[in-house]
Length: 237
Length: 326
Image (tube, rainbow over all chains, first blue to last red; front, side, top):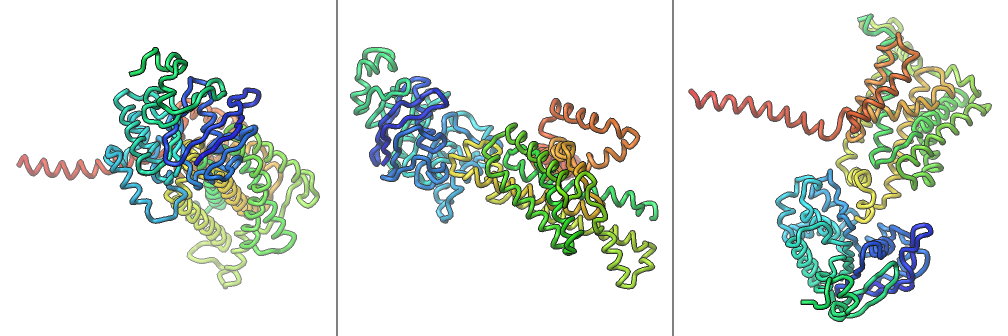
């Protein structure tokens, strides 16, 4: 569904991504893992058209989306849950969700809204509350809900576990799996490597802008280098 | 009655309405979080274009003023397309520079009569007085002279225009467009990934602000008989921004209140004219320190709404408790 070839990008003189390749097959969950500053968020920004790449190709459903404006990428079927959630704090939960559907002109928006409320009942309970008054986990749910409102075929999640309690994190990961089972392809960027590898089929490891490793998620989890660097030990349960 | 219809007071009311229209123009631009100091420049374009049209080409006023607005809008396209890529303070600097460029160009053109400015611009109130005289009301009506009648009708017309713009701005904030504006203002990044074409909406807000400022300029020119490049200098740009800073830019009522206060203030402080700019500066500093959101914010409206509601609730509750104690 998404294919990235020899992508390089950066900020001025700093090269954040050095010729990376990545592919996300239809219907899968692919994880992109790496430490701080590895270039994960940069990769997300480039895919969404928020940052222009220096070179390389990004193909979405076979079409080059390199250099296309963000709102057109969204309408093509890509959606991002941004790092740090970027909730519109002074708008209500309902307005936040409506914002996700801002490009849609069909009349199934209400039905989709109901579906999201069924998935996250807490959001329905708090629908007239301001986004900023929600807890971190609820904000993450809202951010995911908002991204789903544009009916993406491929959902990008940038560190959905950031700053959340462990119990909430496992909830969020469960939801990500459910969304995937309902037919949405997922590219997941995470620092919580253990969880990310548990739900993904395929994984890429990014280190200082280079793709140092990729393979089946199980193999990556058992890779001694990954174990040592990210999983804090030699044995994985 | 005569005291109230004093031309001096009538003129102040006209200026209040013109400034309120300018307040709406800055509100529209700021609705997307863009800090523009170019609205004085757009106002001057509207003023000069419409004044030249009525003065030199004899175009009727009701055509000249909208054309002035359109000219301002056109200029907004020329400078907006490159500058709306800029954010925050950079946009402010660029638009401030634009305003100065417009002023200097006006100062040096022959058609604008350079530093002398344009005088003898057909006045709206004189035009209306003539209409009334032609209607056979030369002696005035209800104790009002034809002059006063003309002035009052001008105020009436301005009030209708202002009313329409306020209505438009209020409708805007609950519309799809207004929501997109608000989202961009709140978090441009989030708006962008939600699929909002931020560039388009920012430009649109910029255009709307420029158009309204141009209209205000055209109206102002036909009230004061005279416009000169000095009227649209740096202090004008800051004054317009102050409407929003003082009143608040969250809701339409903010810049409206700001423009009312800042138009009345110099009249009240006539004895301290030389210190006017200093007082403005002081107001800015105090506002930034103690109430950066301006006098009226969304919370203020909510607070008063709640207060009024709870008052009526309390009174009904009081009645109930009185009844139960009996």
